[in-house]
Length: 175
Image 1 (cartoon, rainbow, N blue to C red):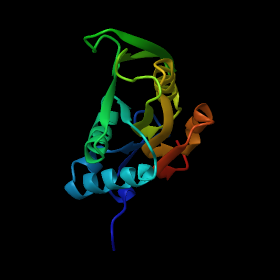
Image 2 (tube, rainbow, N blue to C red):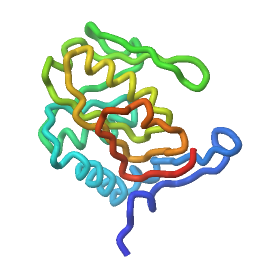
Image 3 (cartoon, one colour):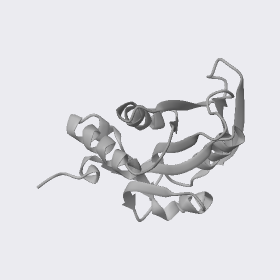
């Protein structure tokens, strides 16, 4: 029987806190077949999408975004934590479970009118992706698709992404 992406995901109960089922992607990317399957499945989600740029946050958005961009001859735009990019940037701050985080993108990374696919390994609450959307749109880019390898449906992250085309390879009902 052919394996699916979820067959490569390791689930760790009660991490980082009791009641949480941690979905570990390291077992996906450490297996050549798992990594190839993950990239292939993500590529299937954008095969009919017209886009110019793949955009993803460090570090796991890089893992899946760069091969997607490479395979489809698109550019990759990294979204980094504050203070990591060397040229002029714009930034967005967003809420975390305990505090806030700030991400940045180079001001010249996305030109007005360019079509952008946002990619990350996981959607939980949607806060990071919502901040990335704001960065892309402030630079004049158009978000045409948002894709994830995994989705934790119980955290309602899609609520923050209403109005955008969002798809995940694997969806888990809980948190």
